[in-house]
Image 1: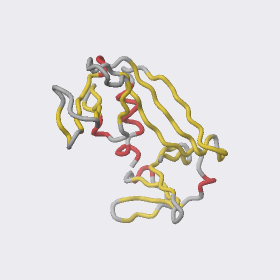
Image 2: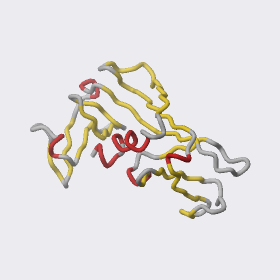
Image 3: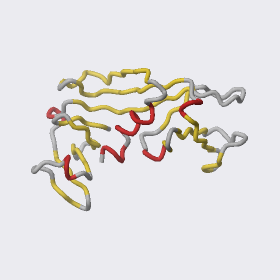
Length: 160
């Protein structure tokens, strides 16, 4: 998950034992962060956070293969982009001309110019300093030319 605290975004861990924001960037860590094993973390109350949400990106791409969906989710991992391309993954078999990642899973980097569009999906648990009664989903269409930069701003490596 992602948390916004004091106007900055952090990787966030929440379970029954811990509520921590985490970063590897000293510039994002305040004096009240604890440094351990190369990571700065701060124990924090859920109610102290401005926002808490999960995020995913959907790209619309026509593989030109009958029966294959036009919607592709890309993960929140920096390795999912390369220059102006995004990595899409098909996990129901091997498609012709695609690279095999593992058994019945193939991948392909697709240029942002070749996708038809993209959207960002955020599932909020907390927003504007308010805890929500139930998770709330917000979808926003994003310009495919901006996809790589927007994805990078919330990828795990940049949050850490």
